[in-house]
Length: 175
Image 1: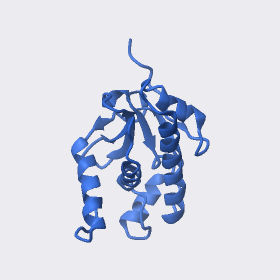
Image 2: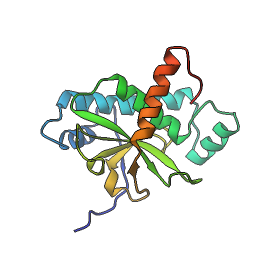
Image 3: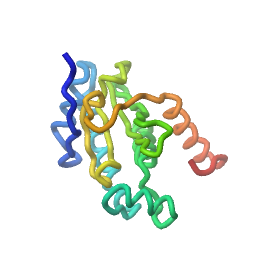
């Protein structure tokens, strides 16, 4: 039986119990503390970047302003990159972050982070999306998203983490 498609829900706080419980439910091996830290990180990343980038609504307008240099950031891949790097720096032991894309290489491409239990298939993960509502975190089963069909791009995740480490050492440049 096919899983019902549904719109991701908005996180209520940095301590959103429903999101935390969804992460814990991914596997008996998931640490409750680690799930809580991931929720806080994802939520606070949206809050911080929304302020830093002076995000406007709707996201499409932010994209235009960012692409014309009027805003410092706010493209979906920037939201996803920032979250990926912050999660990577946490050195997660029971959860892992995956780069996800929908409509790859098209004008409407969208990128998010999908979190799974360590070693679990990408398709079972929970998406974390700060772009869709301008810095307000939404989440849900990646496979059930009513607006996007998500695929993993592990090469892109590795590239972005590597670029950050090169940039931090003083050798790299912009994304």
